[in-house]
Image (cartoon, rainbow, N blue to C red; front, side, top):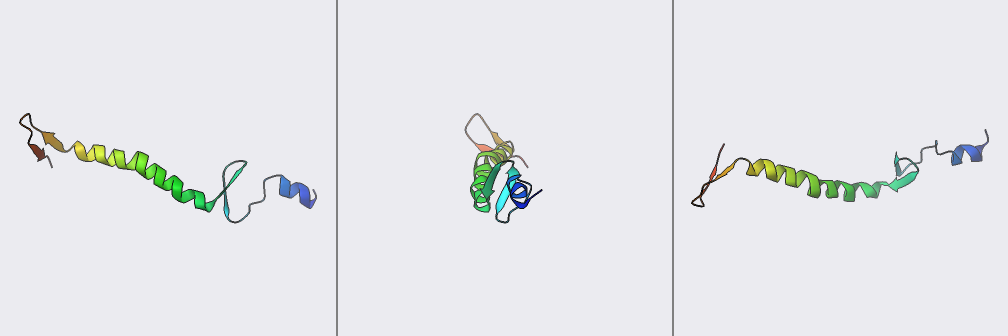
Length: 67
């Protein structure tokens, strides 16, 4: 196997990029926006829902923290 076919086969790992998505070579700077997106749209609503499950809202409008 010559050098060019080894480089084009995708089996060589280059520094500075992510190879987790197969043929797409993503830069490491892609991680921060992805992490922030997951944090905002998944983790925060989940934590807010867990927090709100410890609230007890009475019919007169008062709120008591159960915990």
